[in-house]
Length: 455
Ligand SMILES: *[C@@H]1O[C@H](CO)[C@@H](O)[C@H](O)[C@H]1NC(C)=O
Ligand SMILES: *[C@@H]1O[C@H](CO)[C@@H](O)[C@H](O)[C@H]1NC(C)=O
Ligand SMILES: *[C@@H]1O[C@H](CO)[C@@H](O)[C@H](O)[C@H]1NC(C)=O
View 1 (cartoon, rainbow, N blue to C red):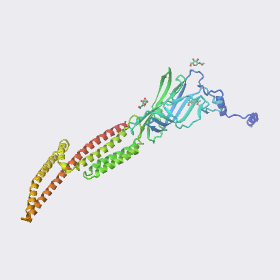
View 2: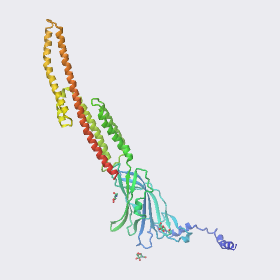
View 3: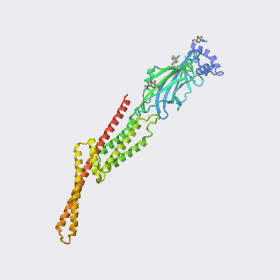
View 4: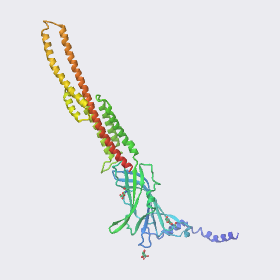
């Protein structure tokens, strides 16, 4: 009872004075006290020789775009810088126990730490406040979307790794005024993947960092570099680019089993080539563009196209050989014999080609030999037709000429069959050669890509 009376007595004069002079909140009062004599253009140290150390920290949130043409990379990062402001110090006891307040970032001194590789600001949200605690430690946290210049190496696309650096430095102040340091340990920053959006095209490997001084115009400048090491996930490109192309090549290889003497093989190969061209035209946007070197995948497409052309040309050649006029068969088979000796085909064929030549010679000789007397006889019989019209003799002559024609036709078809066999052997030989080239090429590429993707 006595206590209540006493408090009423004490609070009465305060309650009377309140309506005339409204009391400021502790927060307001603290802000006013801190900023009353504050000059935001002056580095906040009492003794000018002391160094302001800015602690920086980085969290990579995502890799938005990697552009080989402009050699730039767009990333979204969470950047933190922390430093001590010797003028923003207070006793929490005096201000209602307030330990930390936020201040407008325009009203206090902010270090001019920037990223050297910066080429474009992107779309960063402006954060108008910084956080200050009673011992003068200022925390400036901001999310940033930055476009950085980066030396991108696209040769191994889509199995490439990129190493892009973010170098933080004070643009103007030497190390005697502003020094830099890491807020967390280098290992903690390197392996921090908490915030990284890990479902995109890029996989974050690590972010090693290093500190060094650069000597420029007799002054030293502090630098902290973060190397963002990222690796592309190739699955999308393997499924979308490589596999269809490999399928087309396989279909092309299988089309060698189509019969040689029907025209379908060439038509089929032309349609594959056409399909491949359409596929390539659709792809031009997806391939990275670099000024220096064509990525290996571009070479792969060009060589695949060349392979298809080669196989088509080969088929055309063989078909042209096959349809060579019969008159030239003889010379052709002689040259084929020569080819055979150097080709991988066995001896059996050489003999058959020789015999076919021989039979052709025989046929032509015998035809000349036999035909002339029969023709003479025909003429004779025509002369004698009025004298002795012998039907039997005439029939005999007709039969002889029929037999001759038939045997000639027979030998022609056998020569044609020989020729077809020769062409198929040539086709087979060329096919094997093509397969060897194709397999060695595919093997080399696979080894290269495998070594890159598992390195
Ligand atoms: C500033 O600091 C230096 C060394 O830390 C000291 O020698 C110098 O006297 C100080 N100056 C003032 C004005 O306190
Ligand atoms: C102010 O913040 C810094 C950095 O977070 C910390 O080291 C320091 O202890 C804090 N001071 C107080 C009084 O809380
Ligand atoms: C990344 O590049 C920096 C220099 O640009 C180099 O010092 C560092 O060794 C590179 N890191 C890797 C893993 O290649």
